[in-house]
Amino acid sequence: MQPFVLSRPKTLAEAGDLARAQPQDSALRAGGIDLIDRMKEGLEAPARLIELRWLGESEAVMRALGPDGEGLQIGALVTLAQLAGHEGLGEAYAALRQAAGSAATPTIRNAATLGGNLLQRPRCWYFRHADLVCLKKGGSACLAVSGENKYHAILGGGPSFIVHPSTLACALTALDAQVVIRGTEARTLPIAELFVTPKQDAKREHALQPGEVLVRAILPKPGAEQRSGYAAVKEKQSHDWPLAEAAVKMSLQSGVMTDVRVVLGHVAPIPWRSREAEAALEGKPASEALFAEAAKAALAEARPLRDNAYKIPLAQGLLREVLHRVAGVPLPE
Image (cartoon, rainbow, N blue to C red; front, side):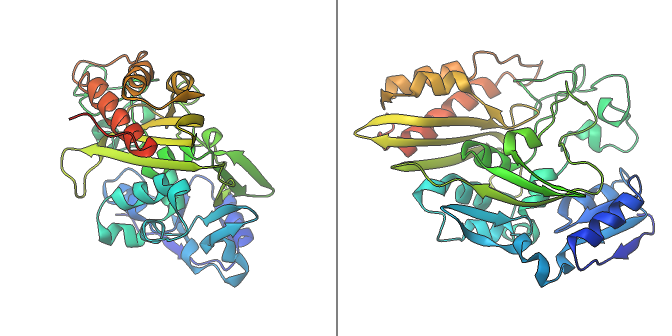
């Protein structure tokens, strides 16, 4: 790891000024889980680390977790452990609590933050290898296409086939979250607009500009009888990355599903919202047959690589499981 200067600004304005002064040679740090990994692996060597955990009381919004008008605000410095244990995330926001509680290990969840989880870089082994120059690092091709691609994208891939690594992103997309970003000006985006596809820019995963800081996420007021859920499948349950994730939100009144959101994770370069599955479910009574139809629709456009076709039935089965649980329809034996 190369030497660096550690700066501890007291305000977001100061942090932004420091980042903009050295846009190519500075990095913002909160929990620092992924950033320190990348520095150890020789992928990055910032000359300056800007420590956000030392922000003063004037930036309390970065640590806020609670009501925001009729919705819920979550500061970027809120940890995954806080989210996993927060009693205010009831049935309406259960997908977020479940996603936070599923990530990594208790030790990591105590340090990892919402902001860091959303903005972490891909875990693709070609990207993480310091000696390999893949498309995301300025090379001419995604090395996974002709290499080992067991964990890579089956939806929306190309020219890079990474999968988005954020667990919270899947749940927050299903819950229609917005994110507040502060730089020289403040702006608010639907969370789907935070993420950048490889077709837009193969070298980036998010839309933040140099000097901008993700400040908080905002969840809208729950709809009538809103409920949600999340689940992931992993090769091992602790300290492992998902093979696939599914997050679902719906309002359920008299057995009829409305305001349905279906999002898949770790199958695409961004959290993958399936409008096809939503259309199959919207306005209809919950049933086992309908859930099977929606799961099939969600993966209809999958285009697997040589080693990852298994993700299609895996994601279909996972989505059916979450739909059954959220809608309260017993799973078939």
